[in-house]
Image (cartoon, rainbow, N blue to C red; front, side, top):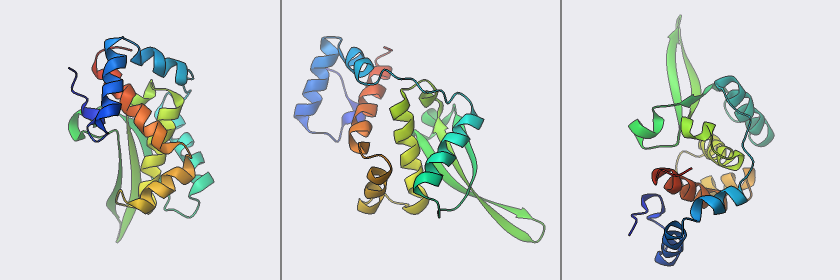
Length: 165
């Protein structure tokens, strides 16, 4: 029986369906059929432009972003798929704050919808620090199918953990 760490908070009947897909070796094929489109966001510059476009579309009045990068160490070190931080630096006699978003490099090769989901999640943190009702409402505002994408991303991560593409 597979431990489904990415699906631990979901009901047992959903976990059982996922275990059945894994046992029949159908999880990867199901995800590939549902999300066939890769994205073209390959480097940090393209990622910054992608995130900035989403931010400008949905969160025009939010604080500006100083840096957006793929981070190869993120998943291993912080057990996170994306982070948002505020970095303060002294410049002359002033304290300059800059917002950074780091996206786990696993998303460089993930389907386009999963990259959008994690970017939407991190952008929502610009307005809402906690994972509360307002946070998830903002995520759904930016990506109406956010909750389905989050679940499917968890399936994708499970598939990757099993060592299958």
